[in-house]
Amino acid sequence: MCDCKTEIEAQLVERLKAKHPAAAGHQAGLECYGFAIVGNTMTLRPYMPIKYGAGHTNKKTGREQWKTEKGTMAFSFCPFCGEGLEKDAQAQRPQEGEKP
Image 1 (cartoon, one colour):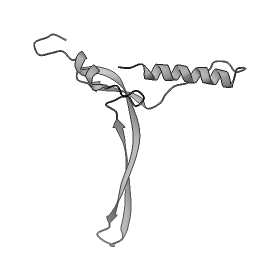
Image 2 (image 1 turned 90 degrees about the vertical axis):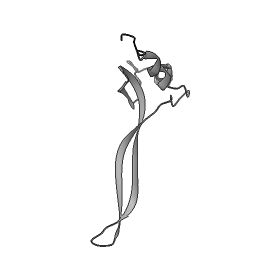
Image 3 (image 1 turned 90 degrees about the horizontal axis):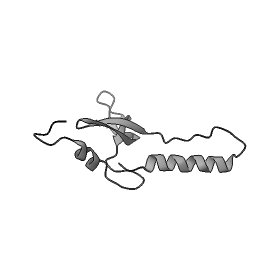
Image 4 (image 1 turned 180 degrees about the horizontal axis):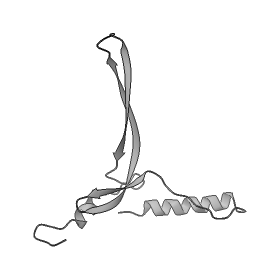
């Protein structure tokens, strides 16, 4: 897996230090990263919250109602550099006949 998350967080801290040099304890972190179990390994994966909806006709009243739902979309590629995340998980999986 690429190091985009740690590199970007370090760049954000440096930018924050330059913007607020008198402050102390500068910290920055990218949100929307979570643990996912892929194959037999647990990996850190980027994700994005999503909201989607559609108009539906109510059967009783005949009126149009807008229904929305929320969910999460996990990336299979790094959103910053485009490197595939699936190939790392496949490389870590034991092959048939191999012991984990």
